[in-house]
Length: 253
Ligand SMILES: [Zn+2]
Ligand SMILES: [Zn+2]
Image 1 (cartoon, rainbow, N blue to C red):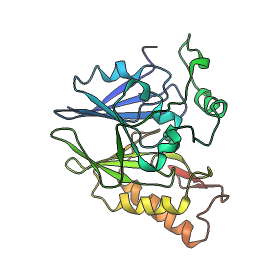
Image 2: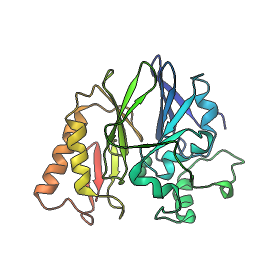
Image 3: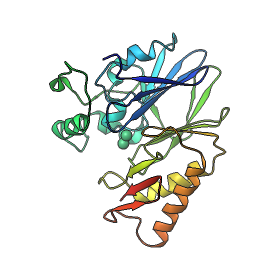
Image 4: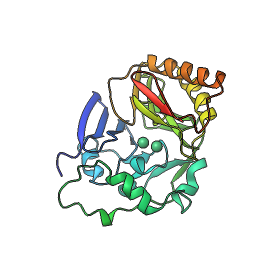
């Protein structure tokens, strides 16, 4: 169980907590302010992320998921103080479009779960946030302010988090290397482009994705935006187009 999580250090008060024993290679981010810590995404929920987080902070912890998908809210049960976007509240309250069986299949797919883990105990987190977020909201941690960017496309209430002072952009599932998912019925390829326009216009110095390689540079934001612009110009930016490959990333439409 002890090697389920890997912790990497970004700087003195920012950490990456990764789950490399699942094929999605999910990354959660701990941002420590002087008053609060913010945990961006809480992983799959197979092991206790709260214990990991406590190794790196002694502040009260606020959790926030970039979006309400199983691989981002798995550990929410350990964090009663959590925020969510207004457009995905129904997914925390019985309205998620997949069944528990379907979700469980995704969670257990290509997953090196620790011995003794009982998948029958898996639950899809449901709950009521302590704060409802919208575009432009600020999360003040004391000495660090994180701005909420509503970036729909992968999901309707998807958020990226922007720390202007350090020029850090936490991109969730909007931007990562490997295959981006924009084919589910709840995705919206046209909104995806608008969201990429928004993040590519920022003076980003570090990109922190929710999955896969951490060797990712801000230049990818412009490349992805350009590719989506091209797809739109060619009339392909819609569900059913299939997988479009661009070398170090792809999008499944
Ligand atoms: Zn997702
Ligand atoms: Zn994800």
